[in-house]
Image (cartoon, rainbow, N blue to C red):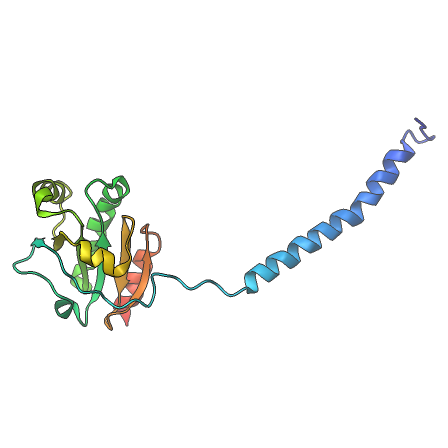
Length: 185
């Protein structure tokens, strides 16, 4: 190894000076990739633009009579597809209760649908009571799940007054902003 008079290794200096153009090239390439990705068209949201399905269920809790899509026409509606054995559903329930209390007087209607049958009704009732859910719950709603292609819980769909979904997902992230926007129209 050769060391010059100022104490530097000339081979190390050559390697480090050659690395700077390479680093600059990598930074420029990364910036170009980010710009391309940013301009790329976004995939359509699979939950947006769907028509409100038939709200059919084997039975109902927290309502005097079965709900229909006609009952919900002209309203901002959040449909909560859930199940009592869904731990994520249970963890989201307090936030849904708070959201319902915050926006029900402003026109937000919440409807819960579970595929659980009448044989599981006592379990569903205990869950609804324990969670302090006071919005209509349709049980035995497997047909609605099927019509919407819902294969996992929780799934949330927010419909505007025209009956088209404007927001959806498996978490509550972004729901409040979407609800405010739908209620403002």
